Image (cartoon, rainbow, N blue to C red; front, side):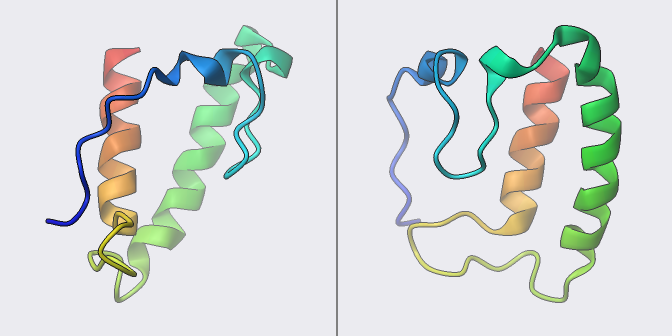
Length: 78
């Protein structure tokens, strides 16, 4: 696996928007989170239905399935 383990402190996402996905935690009201999670679950259905959802686009990027599992794990933790 070419993806190296990440050792960054990802708490910066609480202070500024993510440049990759645009999520802005500081601008998100905690009361909106349940609806955001439910609506994103619908988006994931389409992503994971793609024929190549389990394939990495390159050696340094997770597959959509791996990203989905990561999101699932974060939801379980938080």
